[in-house]
Image (tube, rainbow, N blue to C red; front, side, top):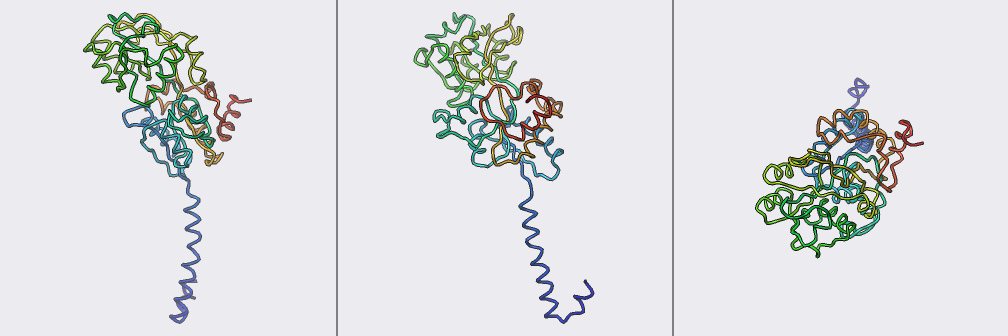
Length: 327
């Protein structure tokens, strides 16, 4: 073919080469259109979502070598779910209560309308509600919180939304407290050390550094959240749990509390095969997630479909049927 083109007169040779070049353009565009992109939506780089998302991206890259996998640091749950609804990500981390609010629509939580394109992929590890008081504040039960000074996390944060739900279920409103502060964990602890606050409510993994720091500085009481209060929340994402004895210095007994599951979520625009491969590869490579963060030790295939009323993605359901989780 090369020799035949060379033998042509120059004007005709130019026309033939131009035609061949034009003919390749549709194939280039087709190849670009067929390129798979997987954007993993996480959270802040100092949290759990981001390092776990990086580990997931590496797992996905091996399972789908033809895909371009990226990791995006975000403001976490609410932003992630809104980005998924807009098709600006393929899979995301979120707290279960935020997922429920997004599915049903809740303006206070940042979801003006129901996000019905969302599809659940897997329930993963839990956050634990940890209500910790100064030992000399006279707080032993949730009823004792009334009239005290409390920090409930940054406004509209996952912790603050958790605080609203749990306190309401216990029959408490913010107006029942002497003072309500909206502060990050570290700042809350510093105020408690200085006796400017009586109690902090934190939604985090067990052994969170902020509470460990507080427990080494002052005597603390870890306040229990009874199972009947958990039931009154009325959200499947909230489940009874236990803070084991000696999780924190001076905490010598198990403490009943509530855990809110984290979830991986996708949307209807992602193909069944892609979600199937993402789900399968994650559960087949859990040690890689544990290496990224100890919270992944709680990820269990047997409970992956529990804790949410959001519709599961067909690709995830295919894997769960193969694994015997879904009949």
